[in-house]
Image (cartoon, rainbow, N blue to C red; front, top):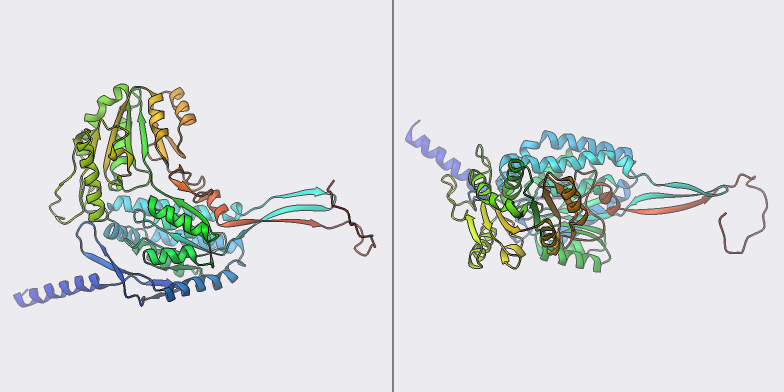
Length: 519
């Protein structure tokens, strides 16, 4: 190839990069992909390269109104569809998602930074919720009782109307799939706001909904930050709001939504503990903790961020660090990558600051992942696996959710001390115990104050038929995500009492004016 041809190809490649950098994520309103008329945009950068992947619009008030209006109109007909028709759409959607697994996973890698295997897991855990919604015919059943002669009382589940979902950056596919499939299967319509940091997966899911024939307006996707959140939590057409994310945003969204008379379920922060007893299977416990602490660069609400080492288990820290040191930090599409970059430079800097605070407060940095170098991605937001030993409960690194590949180790003498530590923490998403003692496991299960408990299981996220049951400061609301809880959140009960007398309908009777009693 001539030098001129090489130069031409280089220019074309550069132009392609520029066009990609200038691309803008579209809206999905009333079944159409639309270019927003927004004047403000948020750049989405590949966390490994800093390349601008797309620009996300701050959806205008007019466009937000159009999305809510479209959902409101669509609800009038969608609520009338039979439960069998909605079940069929869930079956079609799960098949479409399965066929688009690689496309979704690659989008997650480029925008969020996960390694490819973990990105596929992100999609798969969301897909399981869609598959569970194929059981919607069972979930929607009411109850019936003959309460008196010729008189029946029965309940029906009815959809609420237009609902909204506000999603975090750490699970670009799974969390939207916690929300809109359950909402749609129960007969609602939905306005979804994916994270402004990585909206690509949600847009692919919107396209798949359109391709499988979900009617226009049943799902709408809007973008933005504060203005969009304020609209979704304040507009009277929206009956319920689902949120997953951080404490500050979650508290604001919950308070604003409930003040406007809406239902709200909000998953917030977490500080998940793994209690390791000396009798635990050492090989299994160490491998499980390393995977749960550093997978997804620690950016999971169910990541293990605290290892509580009981007695002689404290001697395992060196081996824990050695296993963590073997993890490969690299770009998400690289073969054998274990730990990818963090979502933004700001998130990286915050995690590094908390690591430094641990050292300043007297903890021991057994493995320091700050400053890790990844040759192919010198601009990446990388923090290598980090292990901090001899952490005390008052330290900042223990009190705050780090949300990075950082494991803090606390040493205690007994299981009772471990339980007191876990229960004294304000969060209650999950906790795990590693032991070969059935009695110890049962005691932990009975006394620990966490909504999801693992026994020799490091990340006890329930499958969709059970629901996600975080508690304490990790959850605001009274009805949890997906499963029967999710169906209850998106529906309301109607109780009907009917009387069909056996006697001839033309029989004349005197009017009863006393208080009716049933017998």
